[in-house]
Length: 274
Image 1 (cartoon, rainbow, N blue to C red):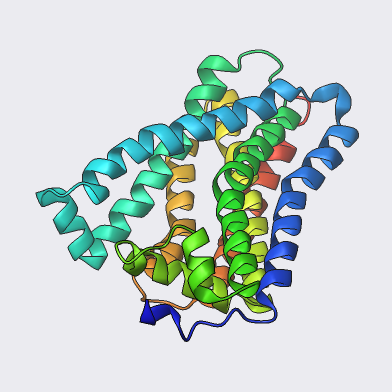
Image 2: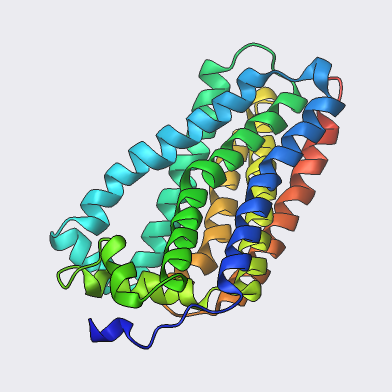
């Protein structure tokens, strides 16, 4: 497989991947421990679990089911969406915003009727954002680390064979191997910044949706959907090679801060109103 002959795993790839895994794991764990210790009397682990389960069903079951028809399967709809950048971006950000925010709304309004406190709303957001890291992103990072270790520890042919890469799937695997080889401390920083921004976004949006539920503000759900769509705008454009990676991180941080500012205002207004 000649396309792999010139690929060299960078010196920083393995340590950068290891540090990324450690830091990305630490983000939800540290936030959870801090919030749980600070508000032990007003928080319940059930809300953390509800956030994780809510994300799983809304984003990884229902949303992925729609994605299969609209993006993965070969049909007129998927060909149109994949063939037009505007359609791909609008579809992607709309599905993420609608499914995840409606999932939050349904779980907190109709299922989590007990122990409704603003502190538990934060717990829900930690569960939602935390499970995305642990169950969705970390497996990919760990797989990348395994690839990097195997490709750097022996000859390329043996390593490719051990990884199950053959002539039949070489083209599909090439992009992943190249990404692993190019992974460095800059990409590590980008990944960590993106996850911090995403955690803040999920916590903030949860507070906004929770505020709408407890204070009977119907505008909060569509506002949360719109803010979620804004957050995903640059990542979707990046997937189509329209913007750079670092512009995505700057945009994510900007939107996350804006959401947190709104959420903090609502959080303070709910003091004593739970």
